[in-house]
Image (cartoon, rainbow, N blue to C red; front, side):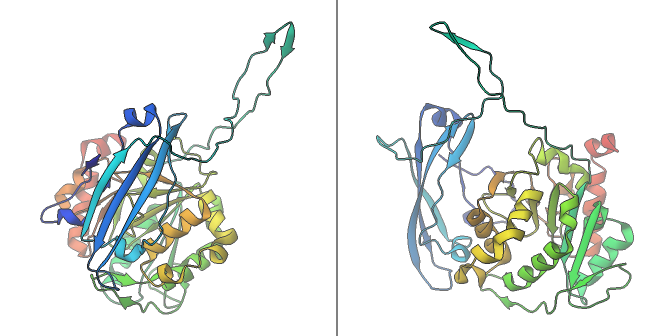
Length: 356
């Protein structure tokens, strides 16, 4: 199946994104296999072509796919010119890993041949309740220029990361007036990529090191990295995390990928990175590219489960679209006046007024 169930604003080129969906009814009938053929002419190595396939199946109502990114350069894949879904098929023989038996949440004694057997009952505590802004939020900014000015405005108005219960700002100086506290992680210099983005993984690796060392993420169920030009409404977080347990490793994807504008991680996911991320996420080619591509790769390498959320981020930059209530964040709004307009439109929606 090939569809385009993502939100875009004209004149965004349709070829810049692709969405692959396997209908749930097909999954329930048995395993399927996704195959994709990709041609990339904008990557740093020129024209390249490769294919990928994912065997997928359902267990207890959950879709599981065995992912393989062999010969798939992440920084090229994001900018691929053509992405054509070749097949969604149900192969005659699809080899999948043997899954462990599901736990028994409740069981009554059973009698077979006059013998009584009692199954062990496993008690699992419910996930802790997420209050509307109980998150640890952080951002990275230069200490001068338009970005720093935007962060100062956020602080003065108590918005963006400063509206979360816990927050941090990582920059290249020891002080960023009027902020009460910042962490100096050194230079922000990064090489610019051919499509207007930045090869900034090294900067954000230092930010993650400082964030982990600070330990504030321990005290909040969810950790969010937010770009300075992203309009973010933490009061909407609960609707997105739902009943997910933050003590299980989760991270969120929008349009099939981790996107730098807003990145959402459970406490357990950050804990996994803190424990061994630097040791196991060592792919030099991915590390040389964009930070969101690197941490997407790293979370998969660590075994963190991706959670798809088509309403995580609207990449539009039009203030009036900020009235679309289901979205957690809107991007990009580098101009302070447009940022304010987006905030006003979002808070002026009927749903937001009702909640306030």
